[in-house]
Each structure stands twice: as structure tokens, then as C-alpha cells.
Length: 448
Ligand code: PMP
Image 1 (cartoon, rainbow, N blue to C red):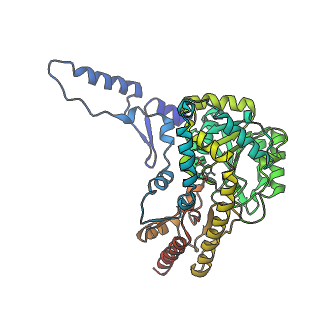
Image 2: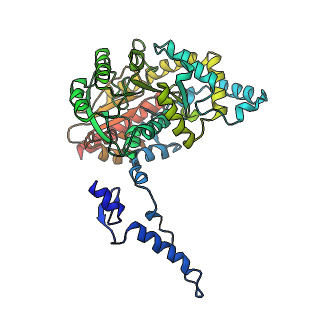
Image 3: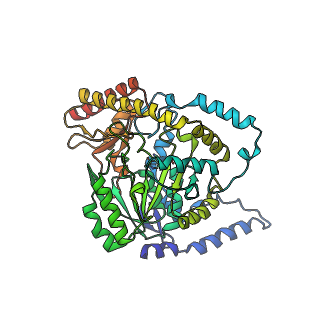
């Protein structure tokens, strides 16, 4: 707080990466009036040159907290053709149901129904909300269209939740490691993030109670199924224990669930939302991983009062999610194409996971270890002792191969000896070539 006050008075300046430094003794208000008087000078008889705009003086503290270099670099690498990226968590382009979407697009356009191209309700296109509610019921989440809100991707859901729940300084709980997009949003909101370690069975609920009792966080953010980045699946007993603790301490749970439909062994895991008997869970889903992310279509299931708040927040962000895309998606779902598509991609991604795992088994230098997830998109690897992901990233870049270094998923210092590999995006031959290059890069560092 002292730092914030000093910064508000313009006595210090914080820069991401550079730290906090003493600034000129002028307050930011003084600097603002200086700037204005600079402009007035231009109306004098002897024109003085206009000073370059000093944008730095105008940015909010929140905008400085948004700095997220890893996310930015993952997004900019899209489109670099000669690069094999195991970084981006994206489905494979070759499985996008483009023919179906092209037909549906034609139908929606030629129907002449202008409502598909108009502004629409903030909560979303009702038939799509209805479809999602019915679809979720088959997955044990018994809800109604009125409780489903359409989002422009589940990332937007995270941002809206931060807007409606968090004040700077509020506590929230996350498992560590966790999704870097969520860490970014919650940090930007000024939240103080309390972390709980994970093991093979997911978030360590035995370490959670103490934290809940002591800090009363605003919510617990968790990814129980095929977690990003670890691939772990929370066991049923942990899920039950997590809910029990949430009920006991009256803490909401935000369940982020983009991957549960992509299971390659056994069957669908029960979501926390499906086990929740007392409306403590806010559920986020998305079409990005099961269909394609360019749709920017996700959804949130939440109690009415939370939805009212989210609606107000969304009105200020984008009014509503693209009407045209929602109409197309509704048609896709109502024609029964979603479930067909899921059967297809589960099969493909299982083969891709197995391809990556067997390539590693064959080529990995000693000391490199990895998890084999039952679903989702990611292998979570531990580098040979002493090797840093940052060193490997540089070496791998020379060989046109990339991944996400583990520390991007940590809130506390950590994960520098870990890397996340995404197996969903490339066909098998590219996976084999990518793993070959990666293992070569690791070996070269080992023998240096
Ligand atoms: N949550 C998790 C755990 C994710 O992995 C992602 C995408 N990487 C998102 C949310 C965001 O997905 P969307 O495209 O729906 O915004």
C-alpha cells in the first residue's frame, strides 16, 4: 500500500522488468498540468515545436499489471510456417469441420434472417443457450438455458469474473502450476494469489483448509480435468473434499473445464459442477478446444445473481458475443454434428498423444521425464537435472521448435526445469520431427 501511495503521488515509478525507481519530485497531477501548459505554448506568437506525447504518464496501474510476455509470444508465433510449435494449445487445423461450417454459413446467410447479423442479447442467442443446457444435462450438469451465458471464449469469462468479484488486494486460490491466461487476468485485477500444490490426483485439498480459514479468498480457481499444464485429473474423492471445504467456508469455486470432453481412456469425469449440490460452482466451458478457437465461443453456468453481474460487465466489454457465429454454432449443434465431431477428434488426439509419448520413449536423453495424461492436450515434462527451460528454449529456437517454459505456469518462482508440450496441433509426422529436434537440442546442451 505504501508503494501504491508513493506511486499515486508521482514519487516513484514501477516498470515491469526494471523494478521500482524514484521519479521526479513532481506529482502526476503536476506533470499533467505541465503537459497542458506545454500545449498552450503552441498558441504563442513564436510557435514552439509540439513535444512528443508522453504516453507513459497516462497509463493506469492495471494496464501495467497486464504485462504477460509468454502469452504474447505464443500468440504471435501463430502463422510462422517453418516453425514446429508445441507451445500453442490449439486443436489441429486438419480436423476443423470446414465443409459443414461452409454449408451452415451459406444457410444462415441465404435464410435472409437479418436477426443473425443484428445486435443480440448480452446473455447470448437463446437457442444456443438451450442447446448447451441440454448437452450439459447429458454430462450430469442439470441446468436451464436461463443459467447459461454465452461468452466470447472462456478467457472472457475469466476476465468478467475478475471484474465482478475482485478488488486489488483480494485473495484468490489457485492450484500451482496453472493456466497462464488465468494467472494473467487475476494478476491484472490486482489479486493476491494463494497457491496450492498439486500431485497426480490434482489440487492438494489437504493443504487447502488452512488457507481458506486464514484468508477467506474470493474464490478458488481450478481446472480439475486434464489440467493445463500438468494434464492431471483430480480424483473423485478430492473433488468431493474440495466441494465440502467450499461449502464449509462459503467460498465460490470457478471450474474451468475446456478439456474434459477430450478423454482418451475410460469415460467422462464428473465435473465439480455436476457434483455441486449447493450452487457454489461457477462453470466455464468453451468450443475452442473441441471445435476451433477462431469461433471465440464459450459459456458460463452460474447462479442468477452472478449472471446478472456478469451481464453488466459484458455489456461494457463487447455488448454481446458475435450473433452470426452463435447462429452458425446453433445450427451445427442442432444438426447433431458436435457429438459426431467429438468422437472423431478424441480418436485423433489419442493417436497424437501416443505418437508423442512413443517418440519421447525412443529418443529422450536420460533424465528427461514426462507425464502421460488420460486426456486434454499437454505433456508436462521435467528436464534433466540442472537444465533450465530458458536455455533449452534458445537452443530449440535454432532448430525451429518451440514449447512453453514451465515457469510461465507458476505464480511463485518455480517451474524453470519444466516444459509444456502440446500434442494436439500437428499431425503425427510433424510430432515425430518436432520431438526429434527437441531431443537433439537437449542432448546438445547436455554434452556442452
Ligand atoms: N482456460 C484454459 C484452461 C485454457 O487452456 C484456455 C485456452 N488455452 C482457455 C481457458 C481460454 O479458452 P478460450 O479460447 O475459450 O478463450
